Image 1 (cartoon, helix red, strand yellow):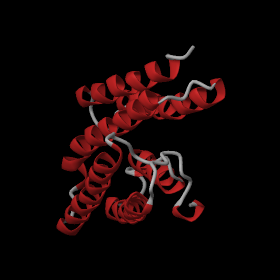
Image 2: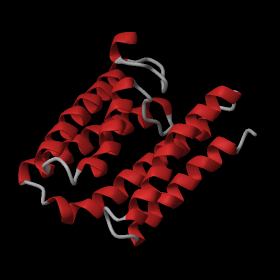
Image 3: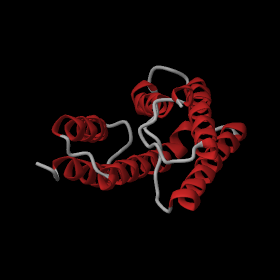
Image 4: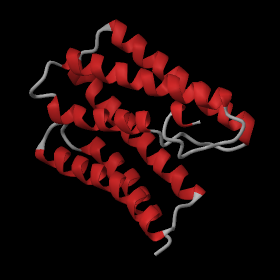
Length: 176
């Protein structure tokens, strides 16, 4: 039972990579996408409920999230026709996230991202993105996504800069 959550995370990596081979916004895409979303919910839920949470599981979950985000960025870049300011904004968010990861590595000699409320909200917003593309103008979706992602990236950076110990499951900057 201990390895089930990790297997789910690894399967999300495989399913995420398989999205590269299907047409974006097709039925096959949405089927795989929903499986990825459900697996993201299930791995952590099962690990917490069965008491099988682990450092490896946290890392696998983060890696699976990053792979899925990367695949989606590559898939949707040609479709959504990003304005230059959005591209710059996304790059800045990425830089803030990278700086946070470097700080974590320097301070704690490990790779980790926080499971804060703001990061979870960002994940939900980004997960909803492909679902609402046919219904809401992409520029509006991108501005909302970037605002939410900026807030969570800045919060994580502040937490990493000010913390004396790694608290991967910290809820927010206010819960210190």
